[in-house]
Length: 489
Image (cartoon, rainbow, N blue to C red):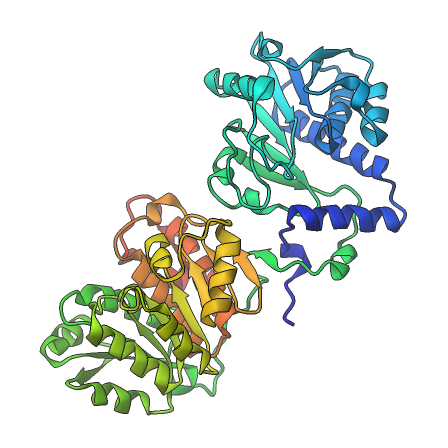
């Protein structure tokens, strides 16, 4: 089983609880973990804001425990602090009761009125394990935080955000920052929860990274370290660097050309466009450094792909839909090269997904599918269990690496590994950028990267290139940003 780097691990609620238990079993008392967590919250507040009135909203569990510690540390540093408890103090037990007793500043009943005076707010009511909508005084208090635009810092995750999915359970405070511990949670990356977290700060609290060996996390942040880019050597030539094929259509030629340009810029040594004869001159004029294969019949595509020097095929951008497109996808899958299926290559199998999956399962070379939300629904259904779970189930069912695109793109492999990206700027929401992503992944596959790693690297480079281009980018800008970006890596 492939493992994921410990430093990039994202922990589910259950996995974080297991890490706490492992630390305790190794001799770190839970009370010490709580003390470190609350102190980390207080330290972040002191580093970022000047001294001002603070209200700590505490809940009945571990988050409330952290809140009491933060209140005590801030008060000791001379900050005016009040604590409001959204629970019956008599029901507090264990570490929560110990830290509540150690707080000497009095405790108010949890209600919107505790926010009078517009203080800085520390939200320590509920953590990542919440699984029900907020109601009553908590809901009303959070509504006032948002209405009055108060500065709010969340402990672990903003109250009302489901830690494993990023779902907002009715409401949640819009936070300036979230302080969490040891490793991030899925909600720190997945929308809409990510949108209310603000700046996410992960603090060490005394849990050793070695505890993860017994937990085996299967979700990671997508970043360098999760993958290594290919590096050409002096003995390489264009075919050993990787020959890629982009199957293009005859009408929307720009989509395939964007994919091809990206494949070349990311390092593929040679690119061939396999295109209808009537459109071949358009491709030839626009892409002087690429080869053009004129496809008159389905057999022409099969003959082209029979050349073992071609390592990867990208099909879908600008392909066109219908039976002809589905037939071309089947030819690509039968040929055996690594393949990227995007856009029309996916839509061509709407309502007959099992046919596509069966063809993928027969292969040994990797297949990467890059659906946006609409294409995903047409192949896999709604995915109501959350984005990571949906992508994992899709990867297992299809046999392909699935890149479920969006501002929080998830990459999932059939073996259960998954990664979430957090570096995509909003200005990537522009026509043609998805075609560039398909080409990036295809170019990396052509250079010999494994499917999951190529998909993760392509997604990360796509986001980083978008950030480098800045506002006003168009899809054509992204490939041209790659040389400088690749040099920096």
